[in-house]
Image 1 (cartoon, rainbow, N blue to C red):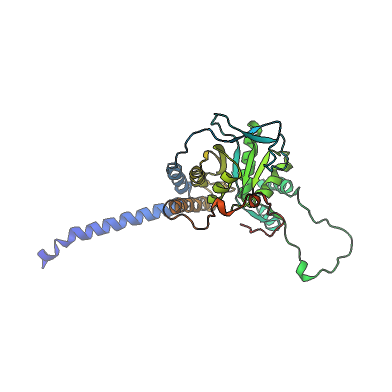
Image 2 (cartoon, rainbow, N blue to C red; image 1 turned 90 degrees about the vertical axis):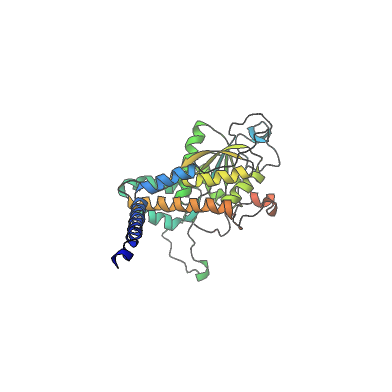
Length: 317
């Protein structure tokens, strides 16, 4: 009996050791998920994923001109823009991807519950965003009865993700004043935010609902070849890949996430880690099973790209 059980001992030891290794790796991953380690390693992986090469050839690019092209609706920017054909592959514009919208009341509540050291900054941001919107003024007039169907709807404003991207492009634009192209259904709100800072050299693409459409519709809206792309660092590789597939070479300008990660910020670290996992999975999906909710450029008219969604009911993120 002893001799028959002896050969099983090495196999049992291997199984035990393998289980301990997997358990240790699982614990390390779990701990790393709530520290900066997981997102830092994940971001390194994302930055080393392949991006298609864009053929470098002369193409129509944005350049300052004394006469604005009449077919290009840029809401009368200053200076006006037209098309030219230089053999220069320096970036000719900033492209900012929208990060979503939120309701003003919810946004204010979140900011009011933030850390006290950020209260004043948050108040300044909120006031700058709301400058272009109608705000209900308190009056001494007696309240009037209103039908239930006309209840107050909160104003729609940029969420924190989009705000970080707008603040980032504004800093770069002051040092290198190139046109700013805003892409996404939230582009009109982003444009208003820039107008509040007297930045009016802005062009919008107002129809895209996801990263794939951001790239396709921007390529249809304007003939571009080299741009600076502004989005968060985790989203950057997937976004650059989509733009490359549509013939646009994008140099990254990463914008920070609203929450800062750190060794004493487990909640923030977890959000960074979740963002990392999502972008890794989304990149794999785009490569192997491209999303079926990405419309072809031919399915959307040029007028639709120009039409603002602001007066309409817009989905909040």
